[in-house]
Length: 105
Image (cartoon, rainbow, N blue to C red; front, side):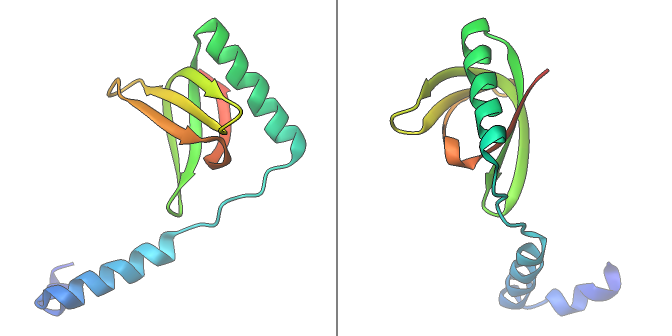
């Protein structure tokens, strides 16, 4: 990495190269089948009512992110759900369309 360091002397060039690398690492959002969506819905409802910890995989800005935590609320009319992150304890609202996979821990 040291031999490439002289090319990063201009901040604009370094930012541009970093943007190109980040775009190459991006993946497209998968298209889920109806049975996968139905299975995720059942898992979300069961995790909500039984207060069970889940692995949650979702798509955000070209990347797949997996976290563990608890489902607090599911709003099917607005297609949102509230997720409490196990590591930070922070509440986050997410769209159901961003959800890729839900599994019990």
